[in-house]
Image (cartoon, rainbow over the protein chains, first blue to last red):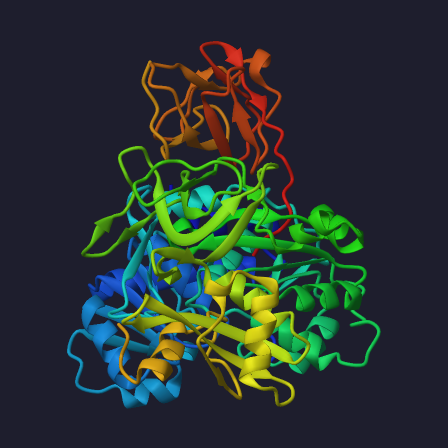
Length: 500
Length: 101
């Protein structure tokens, strides 16, 4: 069991088919070319005597080469966020050395004095020098580490989440082998260090689907590439879809008749964005995918039928489903548990637990977070309704405890966002002598409004304990590049100090 | 007779078929392809393919026992067909899921 097997199978069946296209320069590589490059580079990795293959780069044709070559060579593949500061990157590299690093030519120049780092630039790494035909085969070791992903580190030191070959194989096998038609193309605009970026490579290769890489997301460029490459499916994070919808302002349709499927995940999707997107993409099927790095990507989904039903219905209950993360995938179990690990019933809010073969739930140096019965605590909060639909409600740690009452920031944010002048809202708890924690909010507004007017709005819609004591106005709320709201930053703006 | 481990790769002795074990019961099984025992090496079994097990294998298809406890993925195709303890394996019909990534 090794992810390299999937590439070999694709090359055996559709060797001449285009595997990856880099939309920034039009370069492409076939499945056979990718297989040969991965085999050659596995040899290079083995001869380097390194322990990891690190990668710091935007999407390009070298990314899948590095992923599959690492699997073949039996080395963990470690894609690192290229937006981090030099100091942060140095600290992460020190954790994976001795390593082979693949990066862009400019960064390669800048890296000096690291004895235990063999640096290749993306161009030279992809060139296949003739290697002997008898490259050592890969080892079928289900427990070997395939990928190490540093978590986004919104708090503290980044943790390295471990994904073993067995987890990624289990995830990939939900896809039907060679199921893509010749004309299918998946547009990937999530960065290489995001679990969705890795999942997209694995399932597209297994389906023998052409992948179009968009290295830097920009909404008009995304629309142009989708049109030009006749893209048939794509995955976006909510901030990307919001920007695409914004770029189409005033238009009736996105005019992408080939785009058959659009899936989204990685953060909370505002209802007005998904509704507007469904109007703009009338020929497209929408799927909401919920998953984590620690679960090898998607564990539940809300499919196209549920999207259509919710969008077309006048029934508030059916409409509400548009905000759901759907139902568990086959082979995955989801449970909601309280603080002491007791399983909760329908509509009761608690922490989301997940169990299944693709769930790794493990960090380097920390160990497995999976309990004796196989359950992994996601730290996400939410509930499951009577029909088995999962609803997310922030992070379990985000709960505000005010005077002994547990408050969900997400509920308050939803109410604030429904106000006509509020574009976005972030609600956090800050230390309070009177209440233990007090509710405060930061909002983005389209026109000036008094704090009292917004407080009244919340009071009219919710119990008074939910009314923010303070409300700050921000030009733009802080999100990381994959669409996660940085609550810590909002909190610090109220407390004036590091809240972690 | 041998027990099979998840992730294990096995080759046919009489054709090009290769499989990977996806799941297996904790029991000794006689896994054959084309009527001959599968093993670690592709073979040169002189007897050739047993005509009773000659319907072929398809790359990417999953093969299961009636009870579903044994599941194999065909990773290289061949002319022989798979069987356990003399009973032919069936192709597992997979449920098509919406693409999520």
